[in-house]
Amino acid sequence: METVSNRMLGILSLYDLQTGFYPKALFGLSDSDAHKRLDTAANHVAWLAGSLVQQRFDLAHFLKVEKKSSIGEFFQKNQGIKDGVTYPSLDVYQKDWEVITPVLREALIKASDEQLNSILDFPEMKMSFPVWDMVTFSIYREANCIGQIALWRRLLGYPAMSYM
Image 1: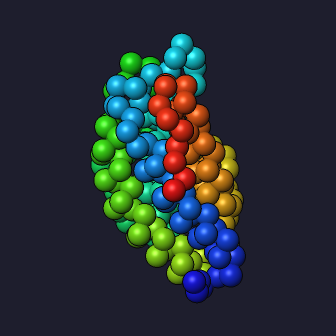
Image 2: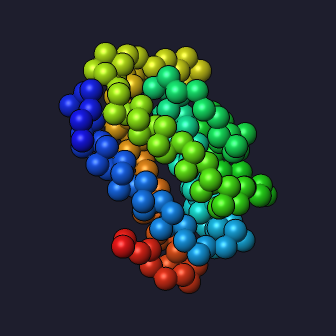
């Protein structure tokens, strides 16, 4: 694989792995089970899965790709989970995942060091950092959230996530 920035090589390997793990983590889960929190304050599968999709759309935006998810209102401005909210179905998330994944992958391949070094400003949070930091954090967070969904599968009585 050839990328504009050498920094993206490892990132793209993880991106490709997680692209395939996402549907495997969700496979067979019902939408009603995806909303269960099992008397905990933990984020449920419906929120985790949706936040991952929105994160890919947001990352694409930071790389100058203008695509909008169909679920943004639930996750705009990094909103946390809301009690009593019915989140979109896992099928809706999967469709958005399939829309953004190839577009974002292409943007990651084409990202230059100049683009990766550019600064993102978030004045409402009094934060700023390079796009590269957002890319690396996003890749880390994808793995983390997919792992949480895999754990939820077991807690909800589903078979373990298949890696094949």
